[in-house]
Amino acid sequence: MDGAAGDWLESLSEQTRDSWSQLKEAFNSRYKAPDVVKYRSARQIFCRKQGPDESVDQYYTQMRKLGKDIKVDDKMLSYAIINGLKSHISAYVTQQKAATLDDILKNARIPELAAPVEGSTNDLLVEQLADMRSQLNKMYAP
Image (cartoon, rainbow, N blue to C red):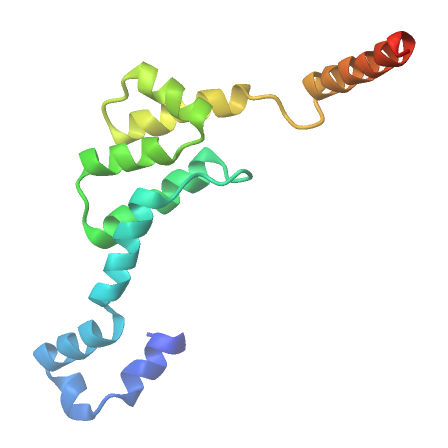
């Protein structure tokens, strides 16, 4: 071991390092997540929403990590992931009746890739329509 883990191992007494059961106990007390962290992860998994600038892959990876931390089953994790996706992505994934976590990811990528990019032609059209509306209002204003 090197880095922080190596420093931690060296800080243990020789007696602890020489006994597998004592070393394992010391490791678990140092590195295993306490129940408070698991509670926070459980709360996050059911409340977390995909961020506006967060990709489906980033969101999915974080949710899988949270699910692993609290040992949630795949079915419950599926519900939590779909619930937290952006609404247009969630609707598409639900329509596809994704059966597995991998299916959810695969199906969630499609509407993400199809969504218009900010500054795209759609945004330009919206701006032009707003400008036309403004000009028409000026023409017909008393």
